Length: 311
Image 1 (cartoon, rainbow, N blue to C red):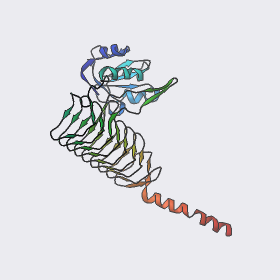
Image 2 (cartoon, rainbow, N blue to C red):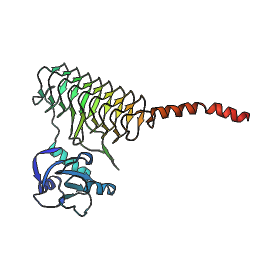
Image 3 (cartoon, rainbow, N blue to C red):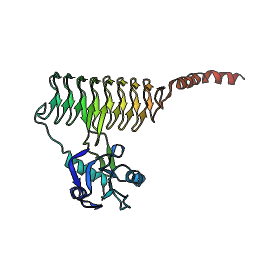
Image 4 (cartoon, rainbow, N blue to C red):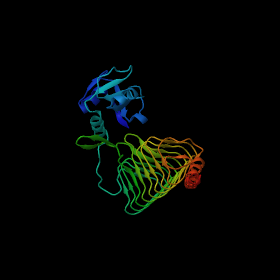
């Protein structure tokens, strides 16, 4: 998430009430999570296990809960609760804006696009040319939709990320300041839910087709010309490369990468990254031929046991 203009390190520290290490005028251009962070961004870290990863990331400002040596060319924001202060920054730079109409005056809708009754389109949404948005679709603030996109009834684009910190008093929500980006020639079925990124974009690339009742988690990227069948659940921060096929009731864990042209058969549970160009089945997912051989072997166990008893 980039700020509307560059801010100084001192200005950011004043917003969250923290100490800082670095020049008062050290420039800060945005804020992001570790997997999408860029130079000029703030990243937060609140666990020793991830200190080195954050300090050595592309981020140039690290919001951290311990006084550490500052890497050359970077700056630190010292906070007793980086999670809380990251939320403060999200509230400051991406505050919630309530709606006063079903289609916001700030929305941009392209030539030839059809908006059916009872559609909600939030603030600063961009929709391209020759799209069809069917009844009861909800498109939250800041979403971007390309040309020739079809979205069927009851689908929701841009709901918050499912991302919480477990505190003694209960679950504390990490606020979402990102967006959803749908590229050209994408079809999205009925009752799908595509969550916004925490700071970046959840993206569905050109030519991909989604069936009904599919969940796509925050910051996930779905490549070009993918086919995804119904009841598939994709967690946050997943990368699905181009021309992947996911059949019904596939589940994919957070952070996994599915390689180009992989095929994942129905009711498969994906617990880790998978190479492209292969077909997978089962839970945990394995190459389909190998998995089916294993299942065939298991079926022979009763017969084997009977033979052993006779001997």
